[in-house]
Length: 241
Image 1 (cartoon, rainbow, N blue to C red):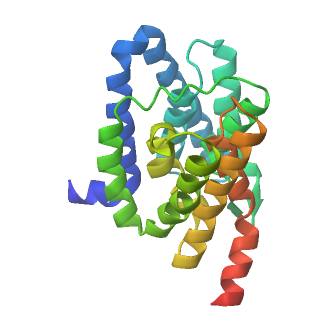
Image 2 (image 1 turned 30 degrees about the vertical axis):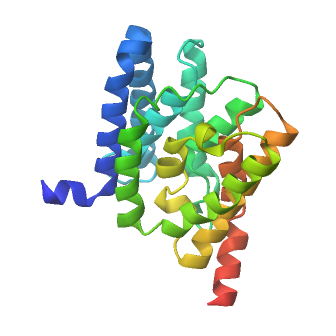
């Protein structure tokens, strides 16, 4: 059991599974099938790409997580073709958009960003229990050493929304975004300064998007922009280290 949970992806899948089950009473059968469909598409396509194109045999845990997130944030009342398209985009973005042979975009968030551009509603149904998210999230932050990512985000997000957004930032914060998506290990980077700058960028752009595009989701685009800055942040980290 200890070895299983040494891989943090297993813990994320556990959290997502519990959140999914907790959301079924509200979303019903369609929601249940919708999320399972997203997981199946992402996992199957990622497995096939790795096995037959990259010649790698692995369990597609990251793709399962992407499937959970894409399906759990998209509106499950949309057409099934919407789920298929954006689930595929999540997997393809991981394998196609790379910098120095590594993907720089959170795969699920990249697909959701495109969905947001085309004005598909992001309902964040996966956030069925914020207390559970915060408890698991605090552990993720501690074990992955992502404290400064969170600090950077909150340093700008909270005062900007409170003083200039005229809203209570605590009430509009997506804890799932903060504790799961923002700190995704492979696309958020590591280190104190690197993490703080990454989180700061996401926090600042969240507010700017909120002000410039009122009524639109601002979490997903802000993470996409922060991910886009990864090459610059990596360069800065090397120059300052």
